[in-house]
Length: 68
Image (cartoon, rainbow, N blue to C red; front, top):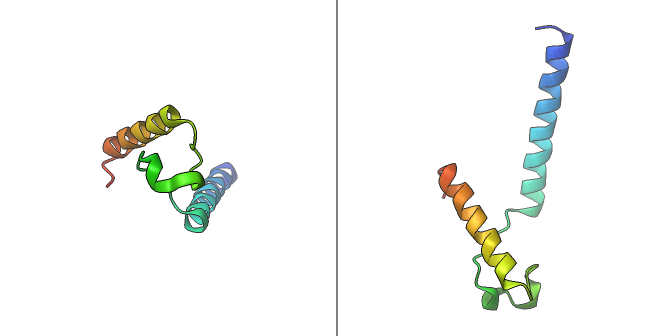
């Protein structure tokens, strides 16, 4: 491996570490699409269609990557 390969590897590892750190700090967003359960704390409050679309997108991604 040359210097450029090491630099790229370090950048990739750094980005992965930052992503894991962010997820550990903020957690995963877990919107069930049932706006009545969140009340005013939901970021989608007042826009049910956007919330439903976001939930549908997440379900498709979870199904694609075989996540629970």
